[in-house]
Image (cartoon, one colour):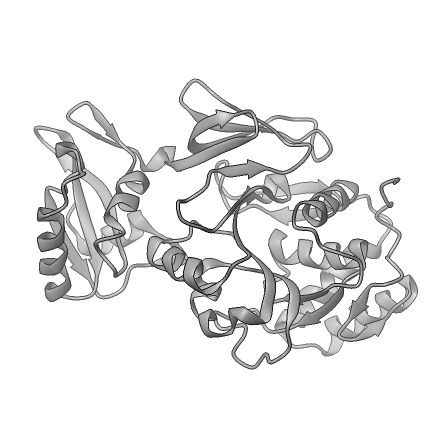
Length: 357
């Protein structure tokens, strides 16, 4: 089957229960901009950008491959990404989908593209941390951030296939998703790859990420993932993500290279150690490296809560027998609230508020 051109809106596409021609869709975009609430204004602006004569749109990156910046994405490449997602997750023409992500960023934009290109029936809700709070319908397909999934656990049965991305799924949430949802996926991707290029079905034992069709993977000399997506960009995409490659199509995510801690010459990926601790510590925490005169950096733990939780974490770690000596935190700190950005822990900023460096 020939790949549809980005100007071709699928004749089965519905928005909020109504079919629209291309011209009518422009009118909807205009109405959203003029009369909509903020999240509808963002959707309207994207619709107008999509329907204009330009072959590209400008999108702000999240910083996964470097400092945040504005990049140009080909509309046709976005169509290719949408089709790849539909094939991988078995999304069918006429399926219902829920849009609950901000359309200012690539994930929210791509839910609109998938609906328009794959012929989905798309409902819109405000992209809050509790998107399912007033939703009673069932859907075939939806995408959320980990924070949204956390606040929607009681309603996730209303979604047949759920994909979760934008930040790593922290272990406590992962465990709950395994027990509550049988067709939920953690995705890996970034703005530069036009959202996900790999996915892992949430299950025990945890599975490696598997690349979607047409995606080729490699690593650089430091073990960071390199993505080759020829129908998205003619440039190799260099990431800052450390991975363990299993073959050219699958990998295990180890953590961010810029999070790596060098303690006495031993390099520690905090995300890997956090996974080991997750079965024992059931509240939010993270590991970090702070300056140390002897070790260069020493490993510390920051827990969300109070001194009682700190003492509980120390007690739990003391009885864990599968930690290497260098994986045991040398000091413990607590904070009332770990700083987050779209669900991602802001490690350095949180540490700066503790004034321990």
